[in-house]
Image (cartoon, rainbow, N blue to C red; front, side, top):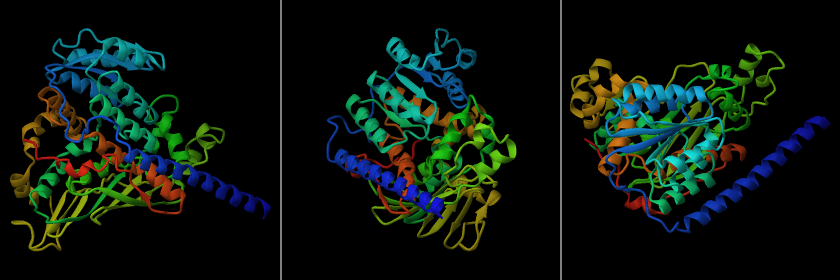
Amino acid sequence: MGSINRRNFLKKTSLSTASLYLASTMACSQEKESTPSGGTYMGDFKAPKLDTVRIAMIGVGARGSGHAKQLASIEGTEIVAIADLYEDLVDRSVTNCQAVGGGRHQNIQRYFGGEADWKNMLQEVKPDAVFIATNWKNHAPMASEVMKQGAHAFVEVPVALTLEEMWDLVDTSERTKKHCMMMENVNYGREELLYLNLCRQGVIGEILHAEAAYIHELRFQMEEQERGTGSWRTPHYAKRNGNLYPTHGLGPVAQYMNLGRGEDQFSSLVSYSSPARGRALYAEKNYPADHKWNQLNYEGGDINTSIVKTTLGRTVMIQWDETSPRPYTRHNLVQGTKGALAGFPTRVALEGGVAGATNSHHQWAEGEQLEKIYEQYEHPMYKRLGSLAKKMGGHGGMDFMMLYRIVECLRTGQALDQNVYEGCLWSAVSPLSEASVAQGGMPQQFPDFTRKQWKITNPLSIIS
């Protein structure tokens, strides 16, 4: 009985400490909202045109190596430097970039072996843009330093882990007038672009609700124990309890709903996690009792469900589960007053039916029944780049299309498709969900990283 009471005391104490920290964090956010950075609002910011984009890479493991090779294949780029802890990864990416670059990438500088070599690279090479694909904890510090050294920062998801880091990225971007874009590739999927166009055309009426998810069983990554994704992600799963990876599902639906862009904004979040079972069971089944994965106390629930309320009263349900044995899905559901769109598989339901496919909203149109929908509402950017993107690959072409658009925007002086505030808003679900779970589902207020300027930010247009 004494041990049980002691456990309860420790649990309550840890929750109390967490609550104090979270209260301090939110107070800091409120202070930030009322204190302008003194820089330029970056919502629709257009940077000076670059004839050739001189690109450096930080991190060329599983994700970054693909980015490097695809960027090297895009006209108007020059890969000038690559940094990674491991020499073999740097050498591999240098070889790949030179093979596809048509002679443009013959003088790539190599940086490897030291934790601070990437900083030396920034100072010595002075690139125009830096692409960051490292472990999560390095995203924000690296992006901040990149901008301070005079380059645009493009960061893998999530853009940061804490609200403090997100505020630092916002302030640094505004003060330096450098882009800081979280590279949410799913916004460039064919289905997501189609749905964006359907929403913009008013086909499903006024949008009331959306559902976003990242359901992707990835326990096999625990095999990566010294290098690779599993080596650093697994401790996150053990120590943190919330939605650790929200943006793949959330990014597209946030843009369907114009969240943070003129129409509506994130307001509050409540979050709950299931018990933590799957990772511990997997470790017990697949590794010796004394293995390091069996020494972890897995505290992060297998599945997290969060509900976001917007300033207009609309709702977004967000789920995350990288543990449970089930098929992959991002949900990608958006509900309007005239119908609904959903993913996995791609489905459309409209009041009165989908012409040539269904007779009412009680049936989904899917598969070949959607040919007329695609014919009428295929996103013009996908019409222009879809075939090339599928050929170049990367999650069905969405990676290539994202990178192509980044280069295109930098070379033509267009505003980016995703701004720094969106990256921070979408990523903020992680620390806010952790706070809500720790407080038994208590609502958490979203910081307004735009400092109320979201109201003058243009919705993402239907880009040709």
